[in-house]
Length: 134
Image (cartoon, rainbow, N blue to C red; front, side, top):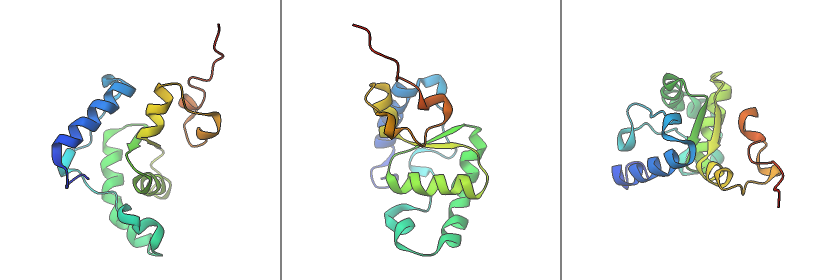
């Protein structure tokens, strides 16, 4: 999607992300949009092959890019990216949390169930679980 649909789609995803997390909490990677680096887990490569070390070495560029932001969370748009970036964080000791964009959207709408919060950091896992008063 990064190269296929170009900057217009990237701008739309940034609008949604900033709307959910707040513009002040958004840190863009450099380079960004259609010039951003691939994580190395796309197209099912992560699940379909046994080349873990090669995949991680390719993904080190993405890990270094994420680390350069200083962010505590990395938002990913798809399952392959989420799995790859999470693995990169653990493998290279990045200590950043990885979260799906759809998870943040559901969380912001108060629709994320307790069982869907297992991988969220402590700062988000309890968010929106308060009781609803009538």
